[in-house]
Structure formats: C-alpha cells, structure tokens
Image 1: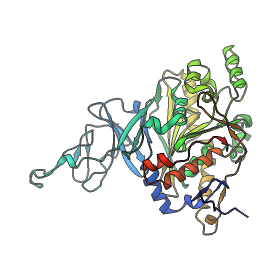
Image 2: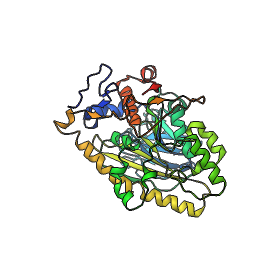
Image 3: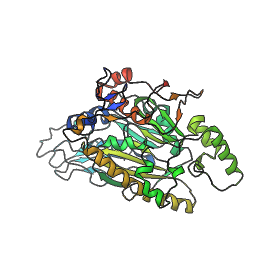
Image 4: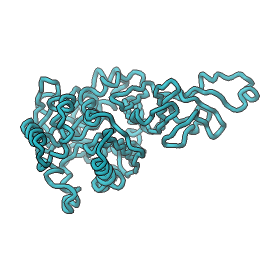
Length: 445
C-alpha cells in the first residue's frame, strides 16, 4: 500500500518518507500561490544582454503569467516592464522582439518611453483638462534587474537578495557551464511549444536519468545515441540553497585527467564523455568551473524553471495554468565557432530537444499523462514515490566548497526540488524564506 504523507515536517512533500502529494500538479489554488510565492519572488531569467544591443531593442518574456518587456532604454540600462497599460490593462507591445522608439497602447493611444514612463496620451489637455499626473501612471516595473555573465534576471520583489547571492555557487556554476568558454552568441529565434503538463513535472524530468533507457528506447534502437552516452552509471549531484541543483553524469578525476591527456595528444574521441567534455579541455575553463564543477556533465536547474543543457541551450518551463506548460528554447553558441561545428550544434538544437526534438516528444507525452494522473478523484489522493537513493548516499565536501553526491542513478535532485518548492510555498516573505529555508544538505541524504 502506498505510504500516506503524515510527517510533522510535511505539507505536500514528506522528507522523511520521500513521498509527494500529487495534488500539487492539479490544484488551482496551489497554482495561484505559486505565481505569487515563487514566480512573484524569485529571480527569473529574462534574456541575454546581447539580445538588447542598443537603445530601443526589446525582448518579450514572462514572469509566471505576467508578460514583461525587457528593453534597453536611452541611458543604455536594461528595463523590465509589465506589458499592461494602467488605463485599461491592454498590452502596449505585441511583437516578441524588435526595436522601437516607444510603446503605444493600441486601445486609447497612451504612449510610454523606453524606461516605462508615460510621455503622452490623446486629449491630455482637452479631455483630462490638464489635471493628470503622468509620473504616477507609467508602466509597472520589475523591482530589481541584475545581470550575471550576460544573463539578465529580474524579480518583482524588492526584498529579494542580490542575484549572485540568490544563485549561490550551484546556480552560478550552472550558468558558468555555458559562459566559461568565451563570449556567447544567442541565435535569433526562440523555439516555443506547449505541452499539457504541470510545469514542475518538466523541471523534475531534467534530473531524471532513470527514464532514459525506457522513454528514449527508440533513440537507442536507431543509433541516434548510445546507451552508454545516454545513461552512464556514474552520476554527480550538486544541491544549492533555494532549490538550485545540478544532476546527471559526472567524471571521476581520473577520467577527466585521461580525457585531457588523450585529447591533448590528438586522439579521436572514443569514450562516451569525450564530446560532452570537449569544453573542459581548456585549463582556464576548468579553473572557472572549479575542481568538482569541471567534472560534472549534468543538467543544471536555476530555480524555479530554467534548465541549462549540455547542448548549449537554455529552456524555460513557463506555467500556463496547472495543466499546461510553454517551453522556450534559447540556443547559445560561442562567438567565432567554426562553421562545421556551428552547423552541427544548430542541428542538435533543432532535433534533440524542442518541438521537433526526438527526445522531447517522448518526454512531453509522459509529462502530460502524469499530469492527467493528478486530476482523478482517486489517483490524486495517492502519493508519489521519490525514494530512489533516499538515505543511501553521502554529500562529499571539497575544500573549494563545491560539495557533491557521487553515486549511481538517483532521485536526489527531484527530492531537493520539492523540498525547496515547499519552503518557498510556506514562507510569508523573503526574510522568512532566508531565515527558514532548508539549507543545502550535508552528510547522509
């Protein structure tokens, strides 16, 4: 019989039994709380600063269900504005990206400058009789906008800690895995598709190396990928405050040394990790990633919903209600990448993940059925099992501070995601979250 969630420390996720109340994937009230308590507080990835090279350049994104415009203003500062006119709530921008001199509401013609300030409206003197405070009615703004290594983040909460503190070493490492190889070029166009699933299941999956041989069996059968490269037994997990994590394949120090020596001698790639580890050949890159980070070939998640992939892509899992998620795929490549490598990287970006991705189609179908299983009167009352490796592994400390769990396929990343999610959902504000969130684990996990 399935175990009932009963721990005094649990509300939805029980850390003692490693079981989860699946109603978190279907309850409309929980979803509304997520928009306020998670997306409304967190530092949310918006775009890369290279997408806004000059004043007037803008890029549309979402913070939860709030549509926002990232734009470089006339002072060359990046603003993140709510795309909603304070007059009747209409959007002031319809294009996904581009360049503009101002933002004009198509309903009544209220006009906003690049910094969000209201600069004019029809009939200001005649209809409003010259008695109107334009300074008080500009577009809403993100409370804070900060940049880490070119990645633009915004938060709607003025109490949120600085971005670098929020990311911590795990979140920063996740972004360093993309940025440490040099200047980045963001390809035009973001691949977007919707899946009938709860956004958390899409996040859950990026740590999941248990499903690979089953869900992606067709990719193995046709030789798109090898079994060893898709699901190596050696796994590394790194967990950081506020829900950030990295989980997936990892190299031992001996394997990394072997790789560097063989590639330095001009040998052709022959082992599963050779192609994935190619960016670790440069000593400067390894130094930036750190002694443990340089050995990780896993998937980082920047809480709540930014996946950094080994295919040089970022994927946002944007909530569209409790039963639907919109996936946005950004492709980032090193500037000056050789043309042949560039073409191959773009091919992989188009055909591995995303709406035409061979793997993502398998995953999306599973997520939608898992979400459907949280909607039934009987099924939603039965908890989900997250016990793989629970209480059986140990966090190993490193003098660098990069602590890791080095083990086999496991569910440490998923458990950490739901424990942290629960911390966010039960905290009243940022001071409460800072004071009471579960610290990154040490010892036996």
